[in-house]
Length: 106
Image (tube, rainbow, N blue to C red):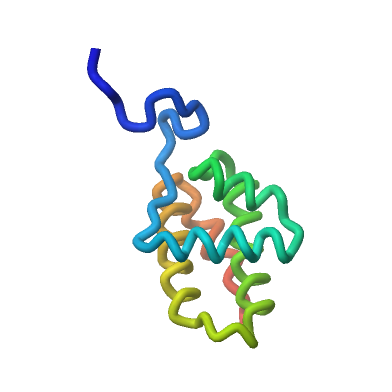
């Protein structure tokens, strides 16, 4: 019996995972999820995958709330990395269109 990736983690079974290039991306996302009072997003990030269109939409909306809330925090390079990570994760989960729909028109 061999080891399988994510064995024993039913939250990830059969679903593409959110792959961070840097641990700091996930840390910032979780910090802002707490700061902005968004337990649904914190759960998605902790679980590590996007399971539905509603979760993809919640994550996309959260990202733009995070951008607005971070204007004084000087984390722009991290925001760009996080955008790429979450965009790819939504696309890999089949929800790339939802991610694109939530981009503000500004």
